[in-house]
Length: 271
Image (cartoon, rainbow, N blue to C red; front, side, top):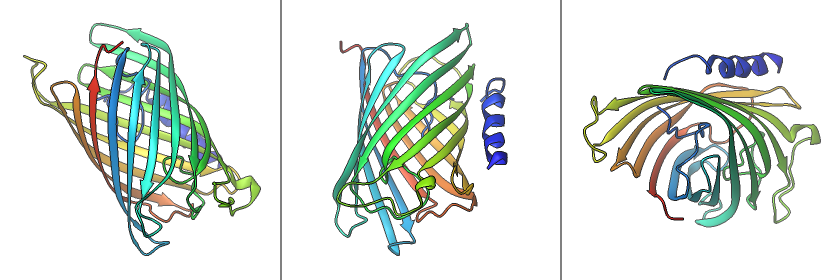
């Protein structure tokens, strides 16, 4: 397990100094959404589920609030067809607090703390802990993001704990497997426009994200990579298209790879 902790720590330190765009898809950067704004988002994933031997479709509507320039909240609902019918399976609350910021003319560096609490009533079918639609539990983490001109890099590390799910879906693995260490490393660049002339211009971002987790009881781990293309329209509408691939896996998962489509709309200066 130590080598994976070291691997994640290296990415976190590396992120302080490298260059690479900041609206990441599979992870959250240290920057917050605009203060006094509201965002509406829906994320859809299509994965092959080896446990059910079928395609698994998950949709996650999300309501986001930028309370201030330092604090934001997300409320997320979870729906899927894993149990042969498209049903609601749970929800989560996410909070992020940006505690450090250095802003310059063409760059900035930010750090934030974040936490998540999730409730889920679906069956627990894998060792990997996933608070985005699979497990009940909580997460506490730290993220740092560096932006220089049109490029950005971000890295995070977090602690995850899985509780029993509702409807008597007891965590089926040993008690020491309820905790995990997660890490992310994301790089992105604004590809278009080459020169800004209006906020109405279409923005096109290309990025790649690395996502990993190590179970603290077994030492088993996974590392995934997810390339993403992102379009931003009128500076307030957003479309993300990504695909997640498994690079290394010793931690049992039923759906290690698949596609993601996300739509988002932001309303600014509402309160």
